[in-house]
Image 1 (spheres, rainbow, N blue to C red):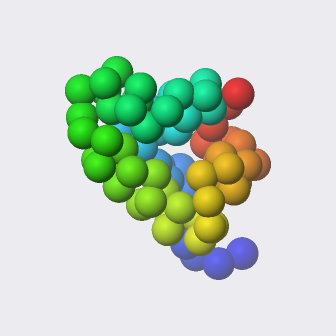
Image 2: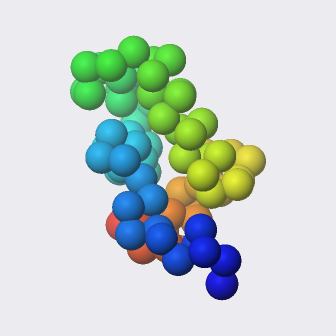
Length: 74
């Protein structure tokens, strides 16, 4: 196991977690932005940051990985 994999205790920031929790509820980028009082660009940035952390290509792949890691419940 690589060192970076071991420290996934706080893989997501609080805000990233909020964004992905809404994403799995089938919310759109616009819905999430309105609910969290942030811009749609900021929502996309959070999603993009998480995808980079997980080294995955898409939102759905990120969701699958987060569930596997126990970071996200559905």
